[in-house]
Image (cartoon, rainbow, N blue to C red; front, top):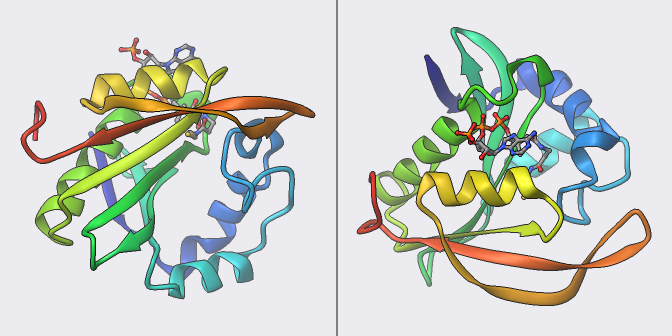
Length: 166
Ligand SMILES: CC(C)(COP(=O)(O)OP(=O)(O)OC[C@H]1O[C@@H](n2cnc3c(N)ncnc32)[C@H](O)[C@@H]1OP(=O)(O)O)[C@@H](O)C(=O)NCCC(=O)NCCS
């Protein structure tokens, strides 16, 4: 069973290690990409009211992170992002279940009207994950991301409470 819970300091080190993995952070926004992340960086980011971080556990084993960033309480929107830290849990539906729960919390607890996400055009796993969770494609911003020295398009998605499975 996959669960999410607000990220607490005891797990900052573990999450920092996952975020420092180039195979993971190469797909993330420029704030995290191609750099070492420390527990102190996580502590600072977690204190920012525009962020909500949740630890993902599968059968009680911590294995990933799902997050809301750019939380805008005036316009009631935020950006979702996520990672699977323990690759041996991959392709078991763990992150899609966690993102689904994240979106439910965004609508019920934070009372947001809309959540968006983006993935680089070459991040097939993330593009498929977002569609599986019920996000709809919202458009493409050309050459708005960099991966391995190449300019790549960002594919944007959004989801609202009326969308499937919420
Ligand atoms: C993308 C990522 C979060 C997927 O995590 P996961 O727990 O393996 O995802 P799920 O098992 O829930 O998979 C959901 C869907 O994504 C797709 N998918 C996941 N891993 C895939 C892979 N390696 N290759 C192709 N498709 C994949 C599949 O369509 C899958 O559904 P299916 O198994 O029913 O076919 C993980 O690979 C990761 O952390 N990647 C690096 C960070 C990242 O890209 N974050 C997103 C930034 S936008």
